[in-house]
Image (cartoon, rainbow, N blue to C red; front, top):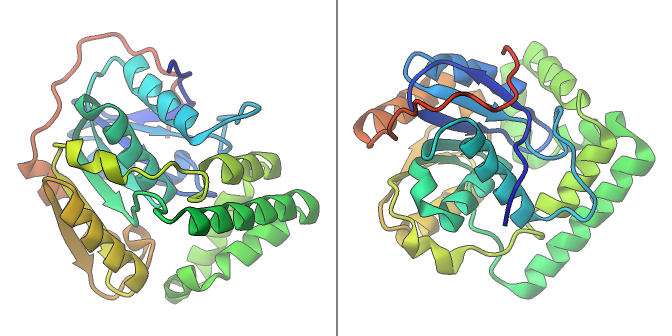
Length: 279
């Protein structure tokens, strides 16, 4: 399946690092992480479909997003990359490695999951995401963002203070309501085809990072580690779902150490073709 390259925020030189944000984020919102890796990597932080400056075409699908991400990597002049993804971005990074194992030199996945195995549970989640998408379209993005940030999943972020909360809210409000609604319908966990049968074919070393306070995803990470051939779990104390935001120094130390001892993808001499913006 051929894909179309996404809009990318790019910085640094070296082998490729694909940096994938979560739902309601953007490639620009990953700038702090990108800065941390730009001395070693050519960091590619795309706006995922429906976010930032990347649209969601009609009748879009999770598989189409995987194709677009692989096309984004190819258009950058690289064949392989290290992939670092958070939440929705982690699910997409894992799916790219499952679709094309040669594209992944290593994986750093924060809050990842391989989909929902039970068909009834997957159908129920798809219905929940459809209802939420409709709410975004009718109530508007401000009401949605405030409700989204008030979820128990993100409760541990409240400790980071009002300035952090205000900045995170501003970033989310930069997205378009139609884009977020379409992204939920196409890329939500209920829309994701389960990857469980493909995990054994992913040979890239994987670091599965969770905040120790995020008990649901701690359990999911250990289950994924049993299914992936070369995976390890890193639980970071006193952090919830967005561990890279709640404990940035600890996360950066763990990710950097893992990438340092993992095989790096070869540098590409191909000319850059991806649409770039300064970050």
